Amino acid sequence: MRASPVRIRIGAVALATAGVSFLLYPLLRPWEDETTVVGATAAMSSSAWVASHGFAMIGFVLLGLGVLAAWGAVHRTAGEPVALLAVLLTWVGIGLTLPYYGAETFGLHAVAAAVDAGEALDVVAIADGFRYDPVAVTSFGLGLTALAAGIVALAIAVRRSGILSPGAGLLLAAGFVLFLPQFFAPPAGRIAHGVLVAAGCLWTAWSLWTSGRTAHDADVDRPPMSGHLD
Image (cartoon, rainbow, N blue to C red):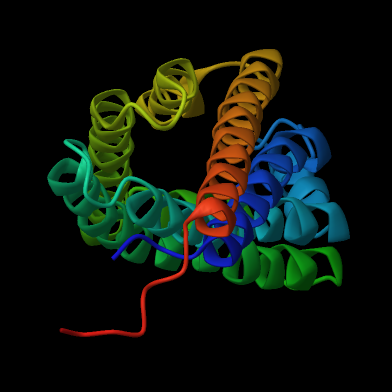
């Protein structure tokens, strides 16, 4: 059964909000030189650090809801099987990614705040020790890889469905395929990536919203069933 228009539209709103959140992430993030104690302390101890990374985490959660709505929107089309795969990969990817973001957001902020208050800690060494810990970085890398694969699967499902905009799916997929590489880009490149992800989310959200309206119109126009069963 295809998801109700209301559920699809809720997913569209979630996806649009995710796009805005992913844009606010690099826009609000402090861009100090984190290879120095002064720069790392200034960046990580700030409220902007927590807010920006918090927006990223909100974006991931809402992205999962948007992908779930897209699966419902393409139900009983040629894109449905791949859309289910997209849901599974996306949610696994989000689950593996969020713990890293949580530690980055709250753990490094607490360490930097302690240094700022006069504690004798090497914030750069602690940050690098966490960021490049084999288990942490592997989980993070696998999470973003699974997430990228999930959004690529969603783009394929969108194209096969004939309901949602193929261009929107491709733009969204491009943003998440580049999510891991963008960490090696300068601040301007990371902000540009935020714009790309936001554009993909907003376009896909609009496509979902209009598909929900189409489904609602079809339900309204459908003639009532006869009360006779014989």
